[in-house]
Image (cartoon, rainbow, N blue to C red; front, side, top):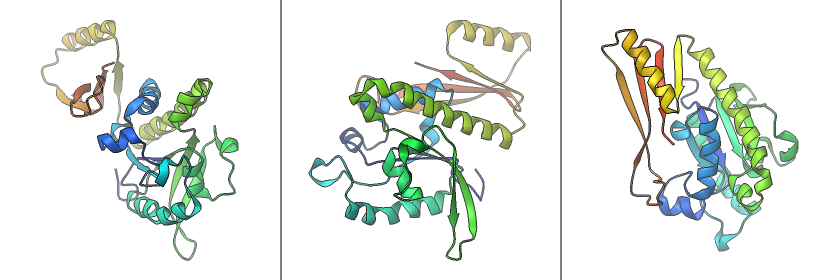
Length: 239
C-alpha cells in the first residue's frame, strides 16, 4: 500500500490446523468457512489480507495449547514478519495472538470489542510505526461452542468497519462503489450502465482455492470487480 505500511491487514492466528496444513493454505475447512463468511457478510474480502500464526507448526502430540518454550522459539519469526509487513490493521485470533503483541498480562476477554493501539519501537524506544488491533476468538471455538457465533460476528464486524473506514480516508477519490449480491441488484446495475451509455469496463476476477465441494485442488470464481470510471466500481459477490 505504501512505504510505511506495505501490508494493509494482517491476521494472526494460533497455529495451523490439519486442514490448512493439508491444503497448504489458510482459512480452509469448516472453521475457515465460518470465519470467511463473517468477513464477507461485513462487505470485505480477506483474500488479500496477510495471514500468519503465532506458532508456525502444529504443536507436537496434537496439543491444543502452545507451550512456553515453543512460544519463545516462535515469536522471533512473528516479529520478523511484522517488521517487514508493518500492517496498518491487525486482527488477533485468540489470546495467544493478542499476548504475542501486548505481553502475557493482557486479558483477552477484557480486550474484545475494543480497538487497541500497538506500536513498533526501536531499541531506544522510538515509535517507528503503529497498528490498530482488534482481538476475537478463534473460529474453531464456534464449532465447539455454537453460542459463541454472535461474539465472533460482532468482533469481525468491528474490525471490518475499522478497515473499511480507514480505506475511505486513504482513498477519498471513491465516488461510487457498489456491492451486488442478488439478481435484482444485478439488473439494476445493468440498467444503470446502459443508461449512462457505458462503452468500456475494467474487469478483475477474484478466484478462491478452497472449492465448496472440498477438493483443495480446484478453484472457483469468488467475485468479479467492474470499474466504469475513475473512482466508480462494483463488487459482484458470488455465494
